[in-house]
Length: 295
Image (tube, rainbow, N blue to C red; front, top):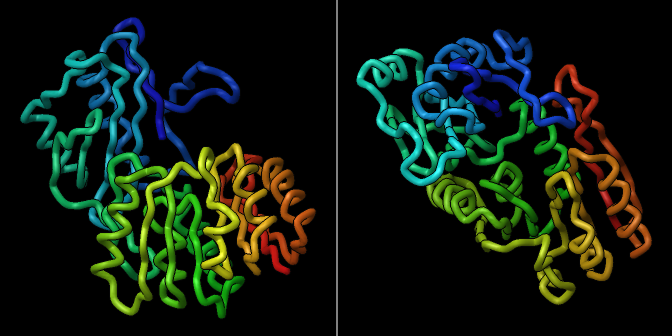
């Protein structure tokens, strides 16, 4: 995910300095997928074409099986962004292996549906959807979740996105996937219908930060995957602590909120059996954590 802004007739494209609004301009990035690293100049030109002067934009780039999926949020007011792309730019997009370009929620160019393969199931994620930073780390964490919850009869996947864990778990047990992103869940439903060898996957659009799954609702499940955003899931952890759920796989990119929520679960009778750190943020101090709680 890049940030970009036009300053003094020049495009600054790169990443935010830690704890700052300042964008560090980059020409190379050693941790990017080669297909993304090779399109930095193209991204600058896209930003120059669509971003209004002095408005900060956000550019999400996903390396999919069928090409790059680029999503631009221009920060523009209605009608302010340069939404019309020149024929020369369209040609460059095709030559660069871009599958889809979306601008402020609208598809500006589509050469192929961008596809990710999750648990062997092809998924077309919605533009700009949350994706784990590393495909290798995602596969490792998915394998951990499947192993930790082996033998479960019904699983709730909380903060499921478009199904990185749901589809793998559905090869073994029925799954209810919940998230507040309706488009992500729609992509999951489509993938689950088209996939083979899956147990039923159902979805529910729900803001779990405001309306956590209740103790009564959790009675249907003997296992839960909990993969909240950086702020953690204090309210949902409290409901889980009061529930009859037997096993929880908790996944977090913030060890501090992981520890806070773990305290709630342990005070509710769970034991923390195993913690696995996952170094998916290469060359950064940030660490993903996967924990198994059981009782």
